[in-house]
Length: 588
Image (cartoon, rainbow, N blue to C red):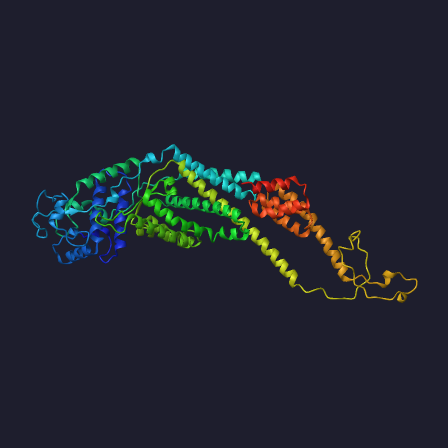
């Protein structure tokens, strides 16, 4: 019994073109999982994919093939030209291709002197990058420098939250974990399991002409076969494999996102310092709800350009991943182009990343995503008509990629924690102010006789405390022999002002102690909050304004620190420390 293309691909005859191409790519992955196949099955599988894509990928050719399979017709669907019309004998002979039997064919579907041509897929014959591209010293040095930059970012982000010794320990742990994980990540080369009908048909299709429904097999361009063999030798020497490896591909994509996220954070910090953006706006733009969206959207054009030009992105390069575009597109097909396929693939990856990879939804859909990557085809591979191949990259590069991902993730978490703490403090302050404004005034009562309080201040300045309002009483109304205080009641307003002054003084003393503690631990974010409250309680203190300005400057908000430093210098013109800080901020 002769099989059809649909039986060989294990898809129904009514399957859509995307499902057919997905099945063809699955065959490529199955036979490419071993870099070099001595039995020649890989070459036969590639020829089968070339013909299957040329026939089933064209609507008119597929319709003729279906009609031929149903009625036993004798048309040759692979003889269609670029415009969908049948190729003439002169056009085929101009290509210099002879029949499979060495001369003219007497098959009734072929005109006298007409040859049969098997189309090629030139994406499969483009040599893959050689392993020398990964073994170069400059590439390794660049990867290591990138990992060190990410570690510096993590150290800068953790410094306001942890003591110096703890920060050093965390960064060292990131370095050790990244090195261990990077060394352990190996590219799987196991062949996909399953001795299916597709494997039997593909390995025998040319010998038995089993998918031509009675038509003889077309001839193969010997030049294309030679290029295919060269590509196989290159792939064998570099150790490429098409077996799906989720860990390698996930780390490659996370590395790209980490690089872009680090770039966006640094760029936004520079813009905020240049244009004096508010801390709340910067925190909103760097929040976990906004920054991932910007990162993934920026990755779309960059990934499309990089894959089109180099077949790789920086993350894929570090992990040894190469994307083969137009993997099932025959040579007579010019649309869509590789750039269009790359852009479609990048958009599908971004959609999956936004709605399944960066949000908690991935925990729900993890099983389906894992199966799509391991067994079938991802939506991005279908959109780009691509096959992803991997090779063992050097351990330093894999370690650098893992360290970069872990360091950027740690730095972002530290930034998000600092911003969340700052926003919570601002919200608490706003709520307390709102509550104090909306609180009803204390009920008026008959002033009681003054009671001596041991915590009362020794002296109250008449200018700082309002004078009590006392009802005018004639001097004669005071009983002889009684003191004036006995006839005068201390007002409640005076007691309230006294209590407020005591509380303010207690807050100032507590602020001075907390400032010393925060400076010793290096917690500049908390120091900034304490100094802000200090300036509110004691606006005439040069120490308070100097504390606020230096805290903001050490936190990286140099432009925000200038007003506070200038106020401190106004209150204390001889403060050389403040002058030096202002000069450092304004220095170009």
